[in-house]
Image (cartoon, rainbow, N blue to C red; front, side):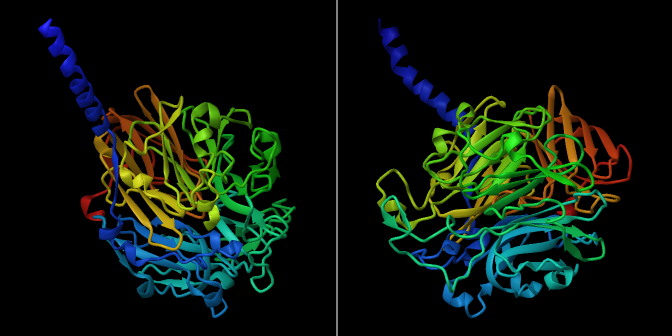
Length: 567
């Protein structure tokens, strides 16, 4: 009798200890913004009252390596106020140089980035194949292209290059649509909008009984741009002749990916309150818009959504890229599962994203393996449009927490905010979102651009308890940034697929290197790299937990570890 009493009295303690031990196996996201040096940045977007729709939109975030030192740098896009915009605006972005140890130095002025306006988003890639990453900034008004001079400085060349689109652009992405080795550029444009002529808050524009800013409904949309690179430093808009956005919808997010495995980059455009667009590349950059037929234009009820950010990833490891895009509140973010026949099935409710996202306004998002278990998780940055949301008394909040969905072996997703760190539950009005391994320790960290405040830098502590591989690809006959390259890792019974992108999420860009989580596997049986040039390279029996560099054209077996001095 006494033994039984002792047994039952210690059982809760044992169970609690076991649960805590299990919790400790998860990574923890630690907010390191203050010590990183990023708190000097503030993304001002209009007034706190948000009287114009433009004040609710930007800005983007990017991880990049502009100086080729092997350490990730961070670029953050900022807006301005209506009054300051009418005087020329603020410098549209800030560039922070990383030292590989979590510290970032503001080098904006020293880099020669001085352009002013109302910044929105960012995409970065080596558009002229000179070996240095260039930067494209979307804006309300003319966009900017900063050509990397290779000496730590940039030259603004948008007008000369033909990419200074004067319209309101939100997101952009680079991709080689015709496989000529030169990166082309897709720009998602939003509204035809004149700050001097639009109405402010008034009784004619309401939401849940409250007066709010007007738009986008009732305002004319703006056609997207598809800019073809001639390989000589100049782009030409071929949108009209290629059938791009003929109805001038409300473009928000854009991402390139080969969703049907035919070897050509396709384009998904997330549109606000208008149907999404999916352009199937029929070869050599000739597109057919098939979103309705593919099941990616509307929600399950055939209704357009307020789509924002988007990404492709193979969450179930079947070799076919699936699609995720964020939406407004009283809608659900959509997880579109690739049916392997050119169509998608919307599975948000079945896979754990339905009810969870109902009250959130989602913006930036990505697929990434944040615990290195071999399955891509999903991260979402949130924040409402209307400051009045706190007064609706309907469960809505203006500032909202992040959402981290843990992938449970491709079968289901579970929100793990409470397990993976209190920083994930810190409410913000977030927009741009990107991942990157800024300390080169093998697990992916996160940067978030918040409106009207400092950004958030989250360091991943413990994701590298599992094994990993990080790969930098350098194109030869393909574009030098290797955008569009597909990588396949085989390790035991696991097969994982990734594709290099330059622009995704919401107005943002991730680490240009390719990351694989390997779980308990200490070795990669085979790494296969399929370049846009149609060449294939393979490396076998690679050790885990290292950073590799692969140059196109070196042949099989040339997967070279990065030396410690190079990062």
